[in-house]
Length: 114
Length: 109
Image (cartoon, rainbow over all chains, first blue to last red):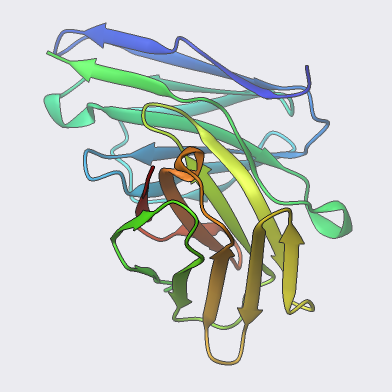
């Protein structure tokens, strides 16, 4: 199946912990993204990587650190988790340039900080 | 800064009705606009992508139009069905994809 896959699907953790979310796409896309969907269901971009290079870094606490080992993977590491980090985090990918056919999203990781 | 607004925020209709969801964006310098569907607790499913050079796209009972100059897009759903119940999101792409808050659609049988 060609897709954007995220792991884990659910993550429950205590305040202060460090956690990672992994994302992989097998669509051959060169750009990957992290979006956050808050409790009001609003989706907001956090980061974007093109060919392993960071191109968008929105106003996100520096406790959030993305890492792209290759253009098919984009992981999100979160340090010192806070209650307000509870949200659904979506990974997405797209192709740049003339081969752009829109974004493809993963199924999301629901993070709950207790 | 691009802002995307969707109206109405929620809509409840009887089965079989034709309906229109509205999306407006503040910066007309977009490359394309994409409509998504999100089911409760699920990810986003792309419905239609309209390039800036196009005026509309159709897929089955769905038709989306784009008017860049006025900063508007509409998603038309024909003969609505209970299975269409979901949140519909529009997103405008300039240098990044910016989402509206969505329209929650409920189709009653």
